[in-house]
Amino acid sequence: MTNFEIFWEETIWIRVKTQIDVYFICTIYRPPSSTIDFWEMMDRNLEFASDVSGNLIIVGDINEDQLNVHTHKLRDIMLTNALKNIIESPTRVTETTSTLLDPVIVNIEQCVLKCGVLDVPTHISDHKIAFVILPSTVNSDVTYKRSVWNFKRADFLQLNELILNEDWSVLNNGSVDEAADMFTLKFIDLAKKCIPYKEVTIRPNDKPWYNSEIRRTTKLRDKARKKAIETRGVDDWNKYKSLRNKVNNMKKYARESFYNDIEFNLTDAFSNDKKYFWKLVRFFVKENKASNTIPTLKDTVGNSENLYYSDLDKANCLNNFFVQFQQ
Image (cartoon, rainbow, N blue to C red; front, side, top):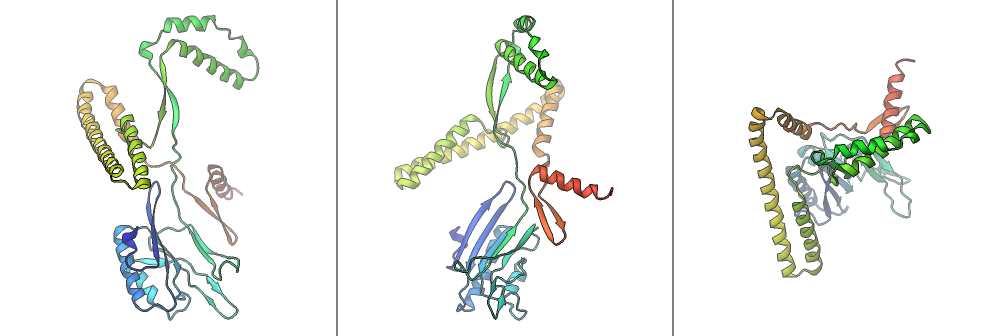
């Protein structure tokens, strides 16, 4: 992100995109001998970044003690740009001094799960590591396979015949669960012989208008981009740009066609096909539903804080919380 790094040479900005947020993270170093120009450039840099994103994280060695009530330059900048330092412990400790030189600066509205400092071996650094843990929702949807059956072309007479002639005595062996699993496997095996089907890949995160042709062209575009970066050839760059424009146009056309068809089908289905009408309604409800994922939970036991990320740990945490009211 070089456009963010024009204000001060000893800064690095990176853009981190999650499933629900985009964070702009900056690491910065201020030499102890720097002039007043540093603070002016830092103020302009953070003002520029704040106009682009509301999720800023600034870390680094500022070399201004935030535990000293008489230092105000960084505090003034944070106040002006609606930022705050969330580190309260010293990050550099010597025999005679204890200073906080490595703040972690975030937006004042930012929710923080945990922050603090960690010790570092002295042969690596004489500063401690400042850290922060932010809440983030992770979408667990993954690509998976499923069978799509064409029941309109099924031969149900043949299926009935196969079911009647099948030896089902094996279901008498083992437990009920084992018998149910065996029945399911045998029945599906018989159905595959009489009902046309195909295996398809389900991608829950794909847009409804995103089809296989767009996916294929997107792969060609990414391959061409990788080659152009490696060779830096004019022809390779032109090929990549051509494929990039083609993908963008395909997406635009597919999206417009999809929603135009939806608008027409809603009007027609409401009058002639109630079943299809409600199928379209459920589609829009599904697309706009809120996430059912439980966020990271925090529990305080004595002076320690525990964070729970997995479903099992979250369930145990909630169970322990509600059980205490019955004791």
